[in-house]
Length: 150
Picture 1: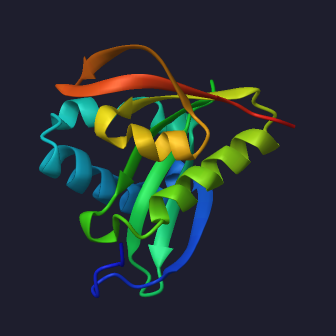
Picture 2: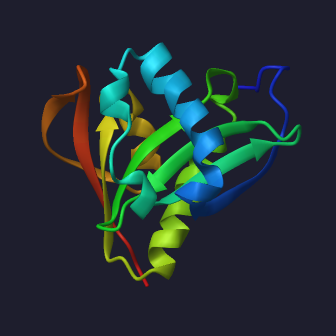
């Protein structure tokens, strides 16, 4: 799959604390989760953002196109890619950045709750599904885990 012409190549992914990426990460998450998927806005924002490491990807025009977060307990969440950047590999770059951060912090494993349609993406990154399907914000999810090697 080739990237739409409106999407510029990826400039890079930064991993930073919430205060450094808040504005851009919030905009991506609002667009993807609240606007596209209909997640109630009050469910999107929680007390964890300040305690997380956040990955934020920009294209060469400087536009923030993808984000995700790593919680202190080794959970990855809030993975979001702007619609026009999907299929370009930017989501994998964000996930790789979060995995690298977790490894640098000595986390033994990572856990995430994947939207079921995105499970193949996480399987390609080495995650394994476990447990039964469940709903979160009205969207089917499944827990996935990846053991990290040192």
